Length: 448
Ligand code: TYD
Ligand code: MG
Image 1 (cartoon, rainbow, N blue to C red):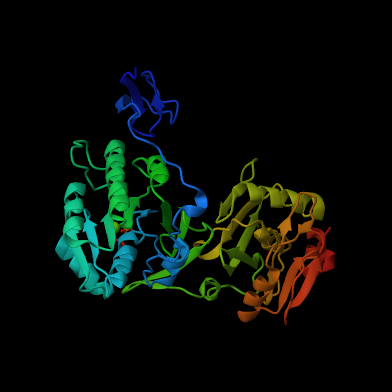
Image 2 (spheres, helix red, strand yellow):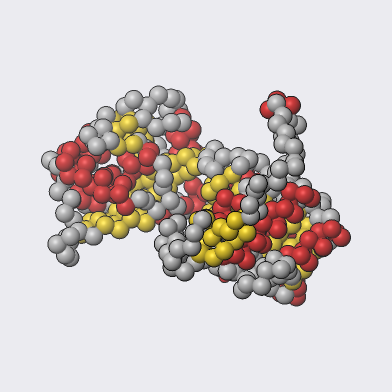
């Protein structure tokens, strides 16, 4: 016979254990385990399985917000009944973005924006500034998810925005808003609401430097989509990416610019990211990376300095520090540049993060340029992955990258020797190794 038994769950990470422990093995926090109900699996329900091909297709039902940069990151609009978490630092512009999305959609469908962060008059003032006073946009300064459910039943919105999960409360949960259990309860209620009403729901979650303060991992696996909105504090650019997407790729990047009247889309980000480029200065190289469907040009800057301490400093912004160390080692070992013991700083301009290995060549050439104190020609771009042997490896979608570079006025490109594809009007310099690239770009006497 099934016996009800007690399970202990960590209030911070959700780890479950059959016995109580002082320290959670899941997250290492102390005194976070407490008793949770574990209801035995109901035995009277008959489970069903359906042949996969007979499940009705949900294609073509996406709800387009009409803000292309937003729709594209989601994979072409919002899938009905999905719970989407939008995370980001406080002040990055999450409420602004969602109010704009809500207002856009509210021209056609009713939308409910429930905010626990701002009062209705504050929301009105913000909406007025954003040009978002759509008649179909309903706002409620509401923190109670039960009340939000009632509002949804009454107004039947096509989209629900809940701003934010940290201020919301679930009925029957007396814990402080923002605490892990409360956050999980709120998300569970909204998930049930989204699924039963087939109501797409956007949930805001503040993220702090230490991760999402309340229940980071907890929420990530409950929701269908996790979007992250990021930006450098002093830069007007805001980048939207999907960290998880059950209905599309996580490769797309949406670019916005924060201005006087809210967020503007940036359909041609390369132009902006290169706008303030210093030309003719040693240590800067333009690379071409592919973010989702679109090539993106970005400037990589490097600086080398005599080390201040015995252990050289490595600072990488927008680039993985381990990759910087690897590139420095390859430059030292394979190209004979004695930069392995120097302080090295690399920065990708405009707050972009280079994940793609194809950006290696641009980073390595920026370092070489800094070391040799010689600029790279301003009309040149570089792309290629660098191996430990110093070999320059192929990159996918070369023709698209070259076309984008050509469109922005670049005339020369350093590409891997193996790379296939049309070069168009671009003068391509095919290189086998990093050493070959360095000796062809910089004056021969300076290397070795
Ligand atoms: P907000 O959307 O409130 O951030 P979040 O919800 O992520 O906490 O955005 C806050 C910042 O955006 C604030 O510092 C002011 C700035 N901002 C503008 O520059 N222009 C605008 O039109 C708006 C609405 C905000
Ligand atoms: Mg906000």
